[in-house]
Length: 402
Ligand SMILES: *[C@@H]1O[C@H](CO)[C@@H](O)[C@H](O)[C@H]1NC(C)=O
Ligand SMILES: *[C@@H]1O[C@H](CO)[C@@H](O)[C@H](O)[C@H]1NC(C)=O
Ligand SMILES: *[C@@H]1O[C@H](CO)[C@@H](O)[C@H](O)[C@H]1NC(C)=O
Image (cartoon, rainbow, N blue to C red; front, side):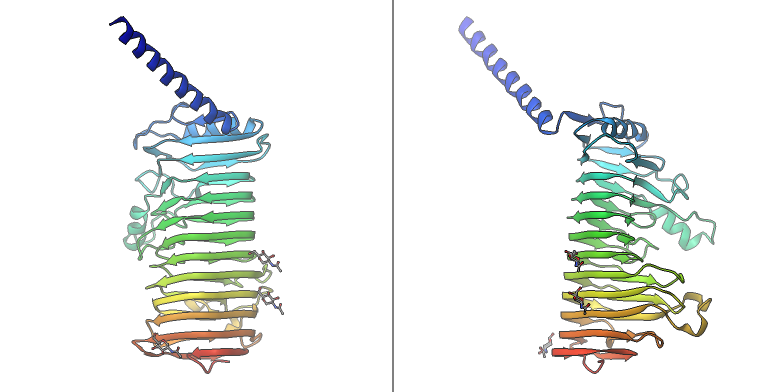
């Protein structure tokens, strides 16, 4: 009997030592600065606001030397008001969020109302967000916008990065944003991969990922289904790489709208590869206002794309002018040049699969079309092109544009 008890006690001892060793190793591996938001007062309860614990975690991580980890365990954590993680004055060499649970917006959309961005990173550097779900609870606002006759707030972007650098967003899910899901503005060196973004196909302005005034942004291996553009690219986006995206429902991948302003930064060096568009309004689109502007679009590659019943698989629209106001003669100042469409296949939901409607003042130039085969109802599709100049290689169906 005595021996059994001793054996049992030593067994328990071994387990205890092992567990604490493992924990120590884990903490050491994370650099020693480890902040679990539950230990800081957060509650996995959809009715209790956990904002404060997140703020405390960020403040501590920001002020710590070395790398820090902020841990958000399983459960649904309410973040009731807009929260800003500012990197100004931080000591840290990097902060990683490990998220197992869900960060939830309040069900009442008026609480966040006009806050612009719900979860905002500003002047942040070396930030990684790994895993987790951001639930924007946007459905109420969409309904308000559909039926509310103008009395609805504008809504918030779910996750925003402003003036930030060396950002990784890995395996993050964003659901039902009120407005855009993710925005990168003024950022440098960003990698988004394995994102799952979804909002209803008829939800207003729920763009998946919006990039502007940013350079070195890579978006890989993500599923995006929304009511607006899967990815939208605004003025000043350069060196952008987009690969292995499934898009749909949604409005496709869009460079623009550009040229709304007279003085505007250009878009340069954008690649979209190995991407599938299913039941989308557009495939790849370049869109500019029909008004004077210093903007431009150049060095763009659209390659290895599959269209499944996309309404406008390939489109350049330089006559954008909603409600027909402020577009004198509808002439766009945005110069579009060096755009390559290569290896694009599948089906168009409309008879015109390729539509290039370019500025009459600055014709689209250096357009290359190579190995394109787009059908409509199992028959060849057609094209419609104005003011566009370029070269065709290989089999291009529909042809006749360049
Ligand atoms: C274009 O962008 C890619 C990243 O997407 C970058 O690797 C490459 O160097 C850029 N090219 C130029 C000429 O800047
Ligand atoms: C056209 O764009 C491609 C892709 O960005 C680039 O490699 C090439 O140098 C550009 N050509 C010219 C003439 O600018
Ligand atoms: C284009 O694709 C259709 C089927 O989608 C196929 O029947 C046709 O042969 C293809 N045309 C060329 C020239 O490859």
